[in-house]
Length: 185
Image 1 (spheres, rainbow, N blue to C red):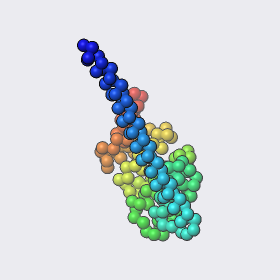
Image 2: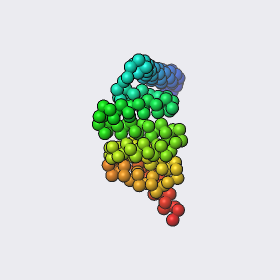
Image 3: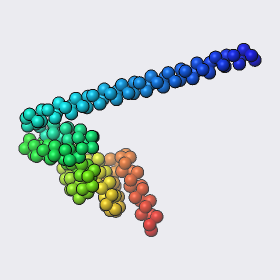
């Protein structure tokens, strides 16, 4: 009995310290990975920024830099770059699917600035170019919800589900809107 008690007294601190050590190592690895990701993103950001200040870039380069500005929540700067990407994409005859990406990013930038009509216009343009673009459809549904246009939002989410039946965002939002309609009847 006493031996068992002594063993327990010795193992509990060892288990605690081992668990703590594993947690600290895991946290350290996570921090290091985040540092490398941030450095890579910042490196890309700086490289693109310097290049585009010196010379005209491709639509892809303007889109990438605009997307990085979106990640940093610098929407006005992102808009300018994305509009340049769109203009150049028309000159370069970029595929419609890639132009849809630019329109979607423009829509997101306008949405973030509460310019909902411009967001709708850009999301619709993205969908016109690429009708199965579920992200743009979900974003459009989100704008409709924000504008209190629940019926249009539900129709948009249902359109997403036609192309992408497993889309979790569209499923959740459509289900929520259906419940809201059922409760209001």
